[in-house]
Amino acid sequence: MEILGIDVGGTGIKAAVVTVETGALSAEKKRIPTPRPATPEAVANVIQKIVKHFNWEGPVGCGFPTPLKHGKCMSGGNLHEDWKGLNVAELFKNETGNEFTVVNDADAAGIAEINFGAGKDKKGVVIMITLGTGIGSAFFLDGKLLPNTEFGHLYNRHGDSFERYAADSARKREKLSQKKWGKRLDKYFNHLNFIMSPDLIIIGGGASKRVHKFIHKIDVDTPIVPAEAENEAGIIGAAMAAKFEIK
Image 1 (cartoon, rainbow, N blue to C red):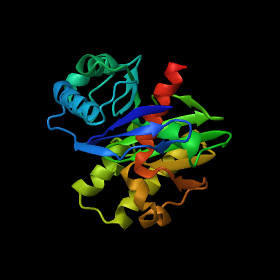
Image 2 (image 1 turned 90 degrees about the horizontal axis):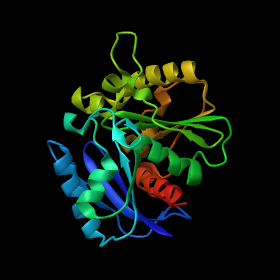
Image 3 (image 1 turned 90 degrees about the vertical axis):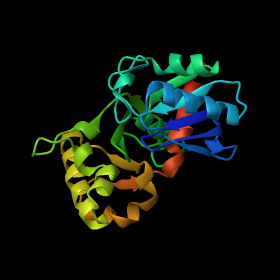
């Protein structure tokens, strides 16, 4: 079975057709820069272009970078304030005519890793952390998702969110070396480890491709591994979420 998976990020919107039984991409990935400003109308227009690019008429799974409750955005996240209160699946369906399943983007990435990657068959508490424009999180207990966690918004001792302090966007904004960024991530992961006591931490998002550059600066007594699907996990997990809804 094939489903179109879309991963909406703060800097890019990526998509591919996914064979959901294996998690493999069955068509070349398409990427379009996230529009600025990333208003609902502008992003929906990009979604329509992607659906047309693949000539896709079936169901679509979409990972979306905001907190979601019953399909509605609880905030604009790192996109735009106009997203707050909108039902994303309804908006995209109206734009394209396709049925959409929309989940938080980090949850989507986590679903991919639990089914096909670093979290497969892992018992206990597994936390997926995506490092990109923001810090996303997905929480699993014995392979079952507890959706819509926002562990990127934990606060550090200075009263700032760790997302603003340690996301990959902070590294770029402040021109931090990998070493200095790694020290910030060390503080974040130690805080997360203390309050959640996970059995495994998986790093996803754009930073998953270069974990080797900063992992030696993170000293946590819990295994930390990169996502095996790397930056494609969000696409795969979004398609998987749509598969689960079809069932």
